[in-house]
Image (cartoon, rainbow, N blue to C red; front, side):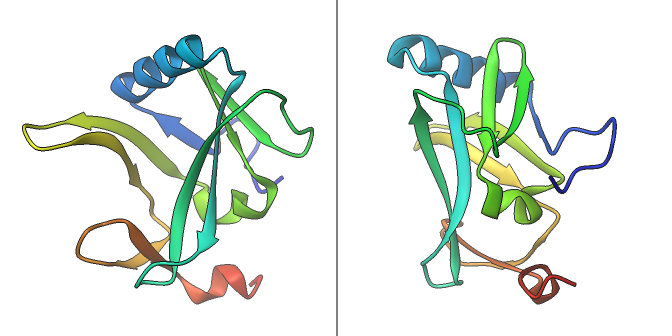
Length: 121
């Protein structure tokens, strides 16, 4: 929907695609839908959910057995994002490296986008 021909909307590191493929297999889902919603101290938060059906309006990215769907309203906010999966001594989880983010809260759970994205410019 907001893509550039020949370029995927988001990319996944090998660690992220392996984890998503593993989760899909465990859950029996068709993939992981990512999006954004209002919330958090910086204004927006990422959302992730297993899906049993692919919405025809979703942007679908497949890599190494992993499938990510981007909700229609989130596509302009997530274009160019790299999804990673990191494991450390204290935590593990998905990390989003998003060039559209202009600010984030200290914990990294809440983000703020360039206002021109939501204004449709």
